[in-house]
Image (tube, rainbow over all chains, first blue to last red):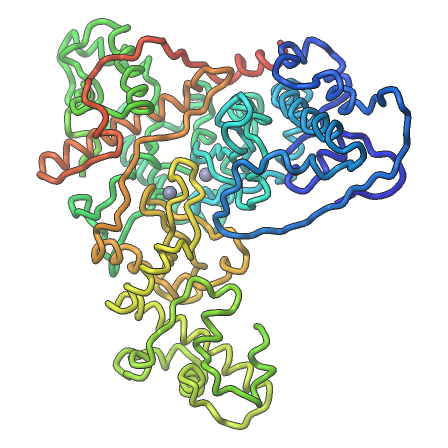
Length: 364
Length: 259
Ligand SMILES: [Zn+2]
Ligand SMILES: [Zn+2]
């Protein structure tokens, strides 16, 4: 990369230019110089003051313009699944080889500090804009999932404090996270991107067309299938039509997980025959890639009130399948249950009889 | 492709198949037995699909010794690779072939699932079509039951038909103990600690679909077990700290603006 000439490159741009640091945006100096943005970081970073000076290229006492040895060790390791957790801060250790130990401590502190500032920067108005430019240029790559049709992804962390997980890639099309394809990114701490950025990005840029090319050539057959399914379902439900809905739970329907749903779920087959769900080796994970063809099914509030009204008169078969009408009644009740259930799912797993189990949902 | 063509004159008695499966980019292929290749029955119908069929077959079985110019040589070489792929698709669903691919699977020769929640589960190569020329090879993860693009461009040019649509599913039928456990773990999009409402609502809906599947299977007396089932006996107890959700749109934008 550009470890080029005499023109003194700023610490920040040389850091961002390192191999494996392609996901980082260059944090602006004004952002770093605003103390408010650094609140609380002093206690998280050893040799904070020196680290901050290094990032801002403020030379401490001795003002030497010295031999910058920046050797790039380019190891394009394409090894399929190489684990390299502990190996993190390596990038820093190689930069300046002057006064060995001290400098390298400051150097790695500077990287940690930069990472933590970066986490905050990319959720600021200015920083998220920077990242949008990188996103448009596809600096973060695309989703490896076949049915996501190379949807552009974003770097995210699964944790906001450093030292836990390396950086991952979030795909808005399947709402899932993936390991970056190149192992050089497995030396980058996920906390430097944080848990908020990925989702905040798509909340901020609501006009992006996430699905992108999916309506084009290759996906045409699938798209057709999806449309047909939607129509069929809409007919079945009668009243509600998808066409004029502009937003569901705050997201434009075409941007809500466009890579999921009918036509985008892998169907296992043997010699052309579908492997039955009832087979021992049958599919068990389709739910993970499902999405209702009639998107209004996700409007829980509206659904609740609709169901409640009907519940007071006579429950309609169609709706019975979606909610536990017998318990009807109280609005908080259902919401709580939903939350509780989803939490169980994510944490310790799900118990046997959920109140939603009426058995006939989506059968057939 | 590579350098095989150039050192032909000296030793094309060296085994073509050895060379083929050990060349860069061909890591997904296993070696087809000589016996299988020489049994005409196994090759039924392929002669129509492959140019210079007989030459190609001779080359694969190391008996090609026609003195020919480079151009023909190249064409035969290309045909041989194609023929090998087509036979490969048939071979890997035989007992021997399955066993060989299983070994490669166990060594993660086909790579590991990129999905974080799959914990690097090994993949299997597959095609979305059994007819050549339709789409390149994909990788199947039995843990999330989804398919992925190979990450290296040298694999993403291999024809998916060389593996076919059935092989990976047959493998688990023949070796059911290789089926991984399935997990409910999933990524939860969050903003400043709050779950994103749209994603959470979808996740709840998906959970309903899954529970419906469980009911269906229970009714059909088929066991379904997810990893998390084992360590989850207490039912319905909502964990106390309320997880609030955040709506998308103006609000999100406002938050950014406020920062
Ligand atoms: Zn995706
Ligand atoms: Zn997987």
